[in-house]
Image (cartoon, rainbow, N blue to C red; front, side, top):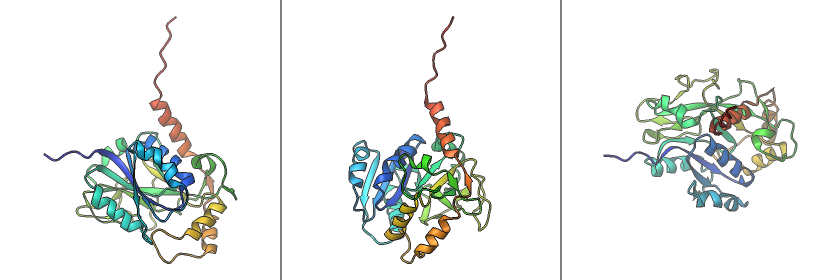
Length: 266
């Protein structure tokens, strides 16, 4: 008899120079039901090891050194090949992407309804700088609340790792069937996103100073990238409407986790 996977839900991410953001990202996803994180270090020179050490000691993070140019797809492939038996689902996401259920449910419970699919595609809401030139104090999810309209979007995939035969940055190919969104639609160009069941807040730029650093460090997947002017022109489209859904979802989740107060009989 085959053993059940150790984790219901894990995340795989490649990172470079993300030390200021790692703790918040891990803690947030732990609170929404992620049980493990496979993190691939791609040429970081900051103090990421200091940040990650408590999570590694706890057994929450597996850290892999991955000094490969444009190493994102090869990191995903390595994770699938080595960890396919460890997790029921693996989300292939980035450190600037926060995946959650708007109604406050934990993500594994939402995924129970999609066990027949090889992958669940989750739509992005793209967030801009919200007017911050320099990085503000406090959590990312509180600092950046302005996002693009629904015409600026893409999707990332939570995969059943036993079914993947080719990984992609956004969508994957499977031995049987195809990944679909939470409304069981096949992803096609120019389709309208659905953010009601699961969504990803993609904090694409963070502050304008962070955006400049992002441009200078290069892309994790592609050797040829757009120029600096393109980055800032794209960011200008990401501050169209205020959206604090993630903060409301956090409050709902905390209310569910908080023990009920005993009634005092009079």
